[in-house]
Amino acid sequence: MSVPTAPHRAYGGDTTAQEDPMSAQPEEAPAAPAPAAAAQLLAQLRADRADTWVPAFEQDWARALDDARHSYSLAPLHAVVRTWRARLASAPAVEAFLAGGCDDSDGIDLDQVLGART
Image (cartoon, rainbow, N blue to C red):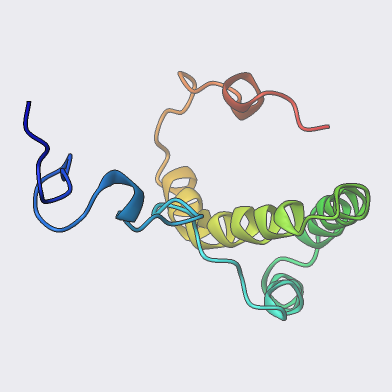
């Protein structure tokens, strides 16, 4: 029985499974919003849609802030900023759809798809 003189490389080439670089975060993870993103978003909401959207944003923000205090994570705050940015970005398309007189009676409630927000 002979002993190989060179170490066996399981994956070929010059690296083994232990030498492969790994990332602690998945590549598809969204980037965190800037620290002032919520204040900028709130200012934009106040300028464009102060009547109904500002109280809803402030309610979501307060809930996320409470969740962040209990979990020691900024993830709930980042989720609120991302959600409200998406709402604000899609608002003109939604308004154009509604103004166009399209039939939306076959739609379903978003709470049925995503679940009720608590």
